Length: 304
Ligand code: CLF
Ligand code: SF4
Image (cartoon, rainbow, N blue to C red; front, side):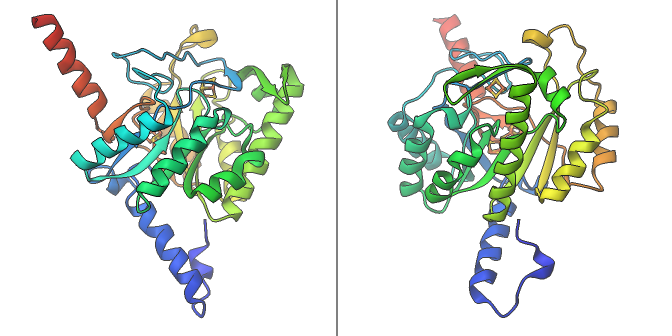
């Protein structure tokens, strides 16, 4: 993020960039809590593949009744995603952000780049947003910048190799499946390099951190300190949804999460209004229109 306090007042170009940065933040429902009731986002579920396996992740591509990351009712092609965006933006012009957040890792799917190209050309005033595990970020960041992505989320669940190792069962990198400490070192290195490069390039970087009791709960503060050092804009501590290999763990209580957010706040601004949304969510954060219409459709099907 550009450091507002050190803005060079003699440089109109830099002022213009800063104004644009602040406008995008002010219209982004995830980055600015005041924007969440006014502006919405559309997620385009074009990215089914993932290059890692997190121990808490179960992805579903035909899911209509769950509201969590990693699920979509359908995977769309880039062209279908463009058509859906046209339709949704026409009906809901308060949507200001076009995001790709799965259901897998956007950077592991070529369709992500094709989709950003299509929607970026047709909706140049909307913010392009993406969420990734960061494994391929150093390599793919130039392309994202070229396509106009300006807000970026990286999921950082630990900054310590031994804790990272407990969270990912494996990664696929350079055509090889890697496990254990070797994979943890690569994951960490690439996340840190990618985040730093994105911040230096002027993107507004947010980190998501899944709070996993007994695994990283005492380590979240170390993540916050590291993120302050790199210059991330905002941190979102999300409660574990206990499924997959972590199905036996108990999710944190709201109080436990609040206490950790309070501890982290002096280091990085905390996002507290995340809805852990689906890969095909759209509308305001508090009212996922993909779910509203699915429920209505279900009712109609039952009646007929
Ligand atoms: Fe989507 Fe994520 Fe962009 Fe927002 S969501 S890619 S930054 S436009 Fe937002 Fe949803 Fe929470 Fe994500 S409420 S899960 S933080
Ligand atoms: Fe699931 Fe995302 Fe982890 Fe991939 S990176 S396994 S999609 S949570």
